[in-house]
Image 1 (tube, rainbow, N blue to C red):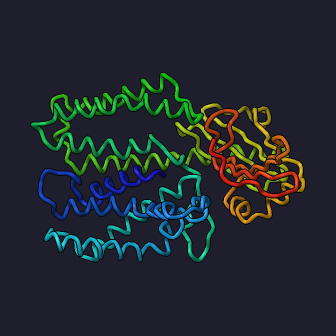
Image 2 (image 1 turned 90 degrees about the vertical axis):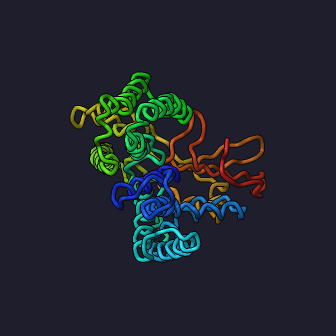
Image 3 (image 1 turned 180 degrees about the vertical axis):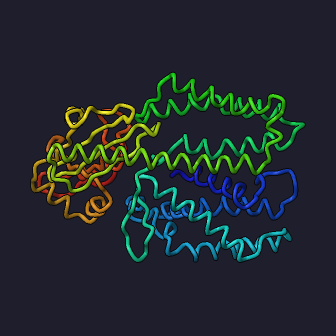
Length: 397
């Protein structure tokens, strides 16, 4: 999950569960605001591990370091204690009323745990048992950047803010409506760029929903009658329902790709159903076989008619390149071994560019940004004719 969504989730938990208040309220800093700030900071803290990238030239840290000890369930108590101690020291210095050290420790623990869980539901993998074990569990429920979930987490907090001041409801509601209304167009453009287009009717449908959500409660100012905490609790409940729907959809998608593998008599080495944006209905079924990867794009709104329908579904096969000395040499490189450890559905390709030999390893769980371009997390090694490594690294274009 992206860091911004983590922070939004942490703030919502602070308001919905721990009676926190708006982080930027006009009132002086108080205990309720510190709770929200602490939940938000705890929820984004694990991604502080990317700071190491700034001081390192190791381009593989994204797969070997990111989502490791700061995302570890084993290390969580230490981070919570450390952050609570820093917060208590800062609030004492500022002479602000703050929760006790024990309460802050629990609050930070919840924030960090929310981050770990929201990373686990994605496909990237999270090293929750580091430093004892460096495996990468992934639940494959939600795409790494999910604008729908981010909206569910964010909009109720804005609604709570809008309707907390009766005298300012009109202008706050109109202002937020104007801010949010263009976002579906922006998100649709992003989806088009990354190869996950959103239909025009869907864009206008979301705009209609945003209009109703922001302006309808202003009619007769009935939204003012809804308590501040209730708006946030509704958002928290809606996010849990959304994740629950993702669990159900993943179960259906995984059953379909399993049936596909069974009916095609595939020798399965790894298998998965991975979410595709922009909705819970779109999934990417992947099967790693001994000589390549099978991909089955699935729309759960279209149910195949029995086994024959599953067999008839259009799929794509990505074969590995035939073995040769260059591929074998590439796989002996420490960097490539790290890439192969990280990849769940690797495909090896080989081609010549003039006299140079090119070996590429792609992990197909990450979609291609545009047709004809390599998948994200594609690692390339360039060899001279005599087998000398000329260059190696991630493909960036």
